[in-house]
Image 1: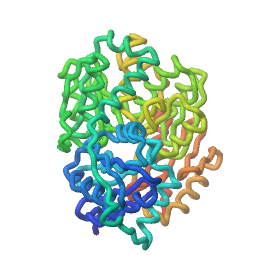
Image 2: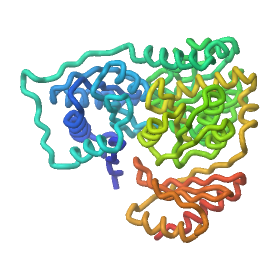
Image 3: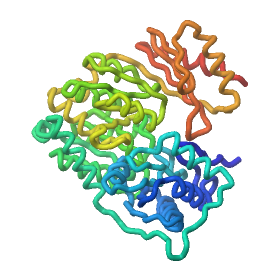
Length: 452
């Protein structure tokens, strides 16, 4: 049985040629055009080969609706947000399947403020796509035109470098003499990473940084998928390694020996460096490790949690005037640069923290509190989710329950969260404690309680 197209407020995502076809791409692009304020719309994509024709389809749909289209080409996801704001566009459409394997692709939507569309506007686009709406094309004399924009990467680099200058970490990074391996894995972020690190005075060792869509290892930057990179980093004689996912909105970090401490350390290290110099609120989601929360508390800063999803984190950052925000999957957001998970911001903040402290990456990691977070997933029949969550609450009756996003149960010993994925037919289960045995036991108990 073919996997169904995932349609949500996050956009659409599916297997190209099966659930994601030309008709779906055209109709979803038309739905976006019908629900944005007047103005131009950017079109872009990550490096997947299927992205070329999907970008052309999206552009054609927008043109047929009378929209001017600004073609950004192949760029990282956070660069779209920078460009939308710089161009004063009505929004953006980015063709990407993020960290999913090569057969997948999708459409991600941006609003005029350069952020991923929040729930309200995104829901209207989704409903228009799913409904019986007939999208009326513009007349022969009202069709949109296309123009290209080649400056987006430069704008992004300028924004990150300026933020580093404001934080007093630009010169320390330039003087530290860092040597860094960059694994672009054939995704959209390799060229920008090399350009940025060059501006920061960092010597780079490129590894598959051509944006050709050839993923030489599984694209999601997790420990298992990065096992092959350990010997590459170790043999390169570098201080650390940066690894990007295909659309470059997540950053994984390896130490000079090729060890991967876990994706949660990206945000924790970035927060530790910036909050020491510029105190203020940190906003994270309910699935993020307590590491980042503990870092904020150690700096005397508030830490606010939101439901999972970039849009929710951005809402929290705006409401609380956050200095920094992010998610434990390797995503970092600096509001001065943009409202999108940005690994390039992460690179600058981590390097800045190391440069100021004089520590090696392993030493900086060892100085953080000790927490073990385990992340699992299991197939989910969504109709069974309410009964499953009720069973979990009965199993841990004395734990504090947060039901804003699935169910998160927390005690002094740790926490566990169960939630349905927005983009895949699975449930994600996360548990964290000082002891791995505790976290593993809790996940096992949660799975055993799932209704059959």
